[in-house]
Amino acid sequence: MPEKEYQRLTRARSRSAFAVVSMTRSSLWLGKDHLLCVDSSGYSETYKRFYFRDIQAVTVQQTDRHLWWSAILGLLTFAFFIITIATTPKTSPAQWTGDEVAGGIILGGITALFVLLLLVNLFKGRACKCFLRTAVQIEELPSLNRLRRARKTLARLRPLVVAAQGELAPEEISSRMRSTAGTPPQTSTATAPDAAAAPPTTTLPPSAPPVMS
Amino acid sequence: MNSSLVQCPKCQAWLLEGVFNQPELSPCPACGVPLQIEVFPALFRNQSVGRSGEAILIEGESSCFYHPQKKAVIPCQGCGRFLCALCDCELNGQHFCPSCLEAGKNRGKIKNLENQRTLYDNIALSLAVYPLLIFYFTLVTAPAALFVAIRYWNAPRSMVHRTKTRSVAAIILASLQIAGWGLLFFAIAGHRF
Image (cartoon, rainbow over all chains, first blue to last red; front, side, top):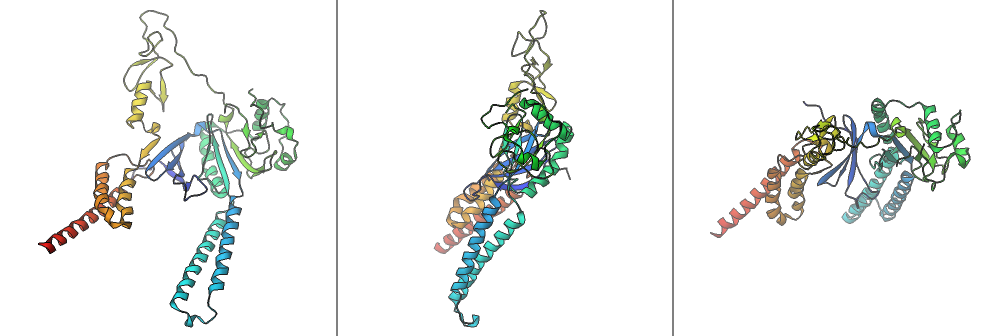
């Protein structure tokens, strides 16, 4: 059997948060020397190739989307549970009419569906947005919309990019960033909590043009 | 996009340190949104300047097919024309002239340049399945599904799904629908005469 040219990294996810409205679904595939982003409308596919040698950065940003979905699904579950309880006849099940049984099954089914969706949402974990940067573009990768999956994909991608480009020492990153920004390099790199507490001078304002070395 | 600086995707602040290549999420120093940013050496690579062809200095020297005043440096591997440094388009170690590259892209001969494909197998399957909801439509759509599935049997499929299952399913379903209509017409005709 011939070796497959592409290995699936992520399943197709909608490009829009409203999956019913948007028909375009995006998935990620791993090629020999590139990452393939496939946008499928069902009847045609468009391909974007990101060669490992060209990938400059991958940014994962945690979002609150999973919390919103949990809240919405929790509310719906609760509402349908209340409706199901309220409409259940007070008599014993043996005395229920056919309509009452059918109503109970339908409402119970809808409640169970929302419970299932809520559990799936909770199981998938924290939501995120993922961006891939090259010299000429910053592309959002919609199929990496959960943190766990994004990390898993990044862990798989990292050695391939390192093999194509070489490794970057952590202390080298800050000094190069600072030299690019035109500020003197510091000897110690701020840790995450320090960075959070650092004065705004560590970043340039959004309106400032990028400083070229 | 030519800067080596990375911006926070939420607040667009330039990030200088603290959030790069960390094993866990780190807050953006400006807005506090949790970020994990993996940077690679390509971020700090200098952008190479595009080459331009060298002018011919000695008479009789091979010249570029497209720019007769420029020195030829390599032949096109598609058509054999001599190319200057400006016209030399390198793709996966092969050298092409712009017109061969364009032709290769249009004909789908250079796979790495293809950025779109029509999924005829999906179209055929949809034509065979969705009209079943309103069965009368299948009188028209079943032959159409069969036509699409057979006409584009050898057309390139998706780059990532390579089986012919959908086309086969479309042919079977469409054939069954056509056979069903045939039997129906046969029964009506037999009943009448």
